[in-house]
Image (cartoon, rainbow, N blue to C red; front, side, top):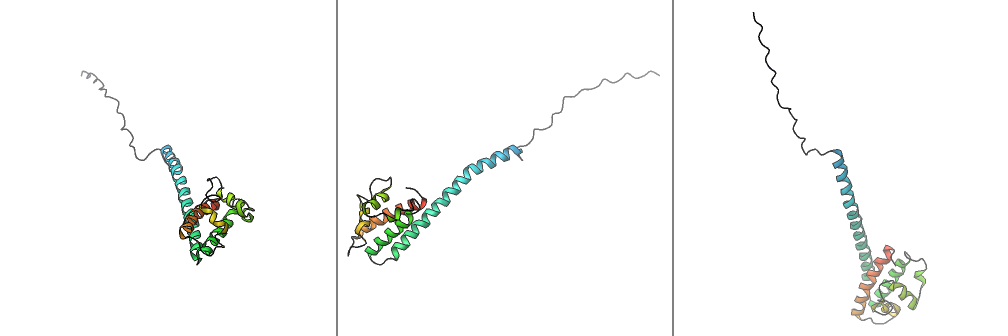
Length: 154
């Protein structure tokens, strides 16, 4: 019997496994996503909390001024609130009087108190009658300054 000739080996191409899918991502991508989310989310959260705090302070200012019955009493209430808030910036600021007080309230925003509608704080609480337009201008100015002082900004 004749031995059969060996069959030649049939070589086939290398079988490459399929490429990995994009899901689930590698741990490094999860970490990168977490860092990006924190870098965007934390400042947004802080900004939202700051806005909410400012709204609460403005509402407190409005509520206390609205509780006063007459316009001169509203001027006095605004002055009292500003003096309380001034302690956040300088613990002796609430003791200032006259022009020194108005100059302190001006801060770095020009002269809205010492040369503008804020001058009503100087004697508006003692007047018999206060012009409603002047009172409204004062309240807007004082509300904005109250919020700044509550934040601790000069």
